[in-house]
Amino acid sequence: MKWFLPFSLSRYHTLFIAILSSFGAFCYFIPGFPFHRNFHIIALVSAAFHLFLFLFFKNLSQIMPWILSLMSTLNILLMGFVLHYSGGITSPFTFVFICILIAEAAYGIEYPTGLITALGVYLAVILAEFLGVLRPYDLTARQIYQSIPATLLVVASTLVFFVLAGFFYKIIMRNMRKKLQTDQEEKEIILNKLFRLEASSQIGLLVNKIVHDIRGPLGATKGFIKMLQTEEKISPVAKQDCRVMIQELDRISGLLNHMTAYSKPCQTSMEILDPAKILDTILSIISFYPETKNICFIKRFSSRDGHGIRGNKEQMHQAYFNILKNSIEGMDPSKKSPSIELEIDADARNMTIQIRDNGRGIPKALLKKLTREPISTKKEGTGIGLLLVKEILEAHRGEINITSQEGMGTTIRTQIPLA
Image 1 (cartoon, rainbow, N blue to C red):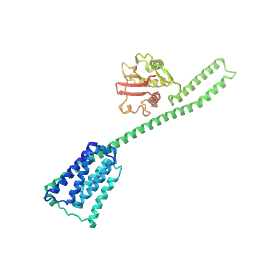
Image 2: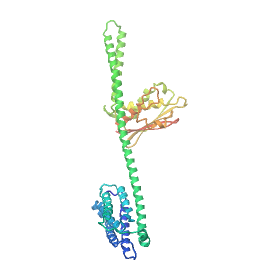
Image 3: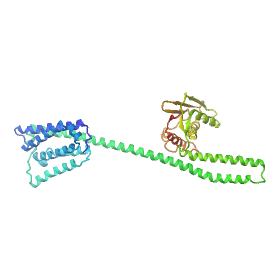
Image 4: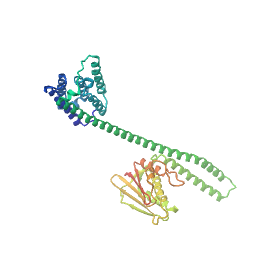
């Protein structure tokens, strides 16, 4: 039987029973005490037993953990004798069996001996008295009230065991709430893992399907152009145009290969990268977008001598291109001074790259879902941009954190370990 109560409570609970039993044994010398004289003998045995447990509780519980289960069983057997010698089925101590069962539930019934013994002892005493095997001792409430010590003994026992029963009930509820909370947390962890796996799988399937659907007509177009190139009737200018078209088709094919690589992060070559050069390259490309004409880009790159990150160059370009593109598309056209700040800083372990804009911001309802499921506020958006960013960063042992306030802007903070 596990004892989930604090050690001191279990020990002083034992001391209380020893004192109460000693008082019951002492009452033998008080004239007019209503209980049978054997009741006092049982009380004396119980007092000695519990006093011994109190004095050596710590050593016994450490050396022989099963002693707690044995103590519970012996308590119940002693209570069987108390029940018999204090009135049987009308005994004022019947409620103690209820307290014992509640205590067993609070402790957790790992060994069912306490529960089985309590039920067996109670039924055995009642059945033995009913069949006449044991002579029942009649004890009325009037007889108890006529003896002040007997009244105090019953009242004190009842009150204290009621308090203990209430305390045990609180323990049961606390353990249940804790278990429910733990189960819920474990469930959420498992669901998050499953969702991440599912999201990653769905992105991979989506990319592969798109690539598969495009490669068919792309290959047919390329083959037709090559056949056209061999025709003698076409002019040299047309042949040159054919060469240019084939080159562009090859470039599209290369982009498709990159798409399939992005669906499986970190399976390509890794190298030491300078985040500043990555952002500068992305800014030079993204500056051709018409939406960037009125946006002020502010760079705050701290000194990074000897600092770099290990990663795949193309994947890093893709990740931060997606972030910057989202920031640009999230700008409010009516804002007078739209700006995007790019900040790079490094500590002893991580490189921090932060991109902050003063755009429309993201609603709170969507903020927590952005890196968990495909969500887009754009008409033609797929919602997988930030999911892909998260996949790439996590494949590089990095992380992403998004904070936003509607009307004020959005901050995306990423951290990647230093090489």
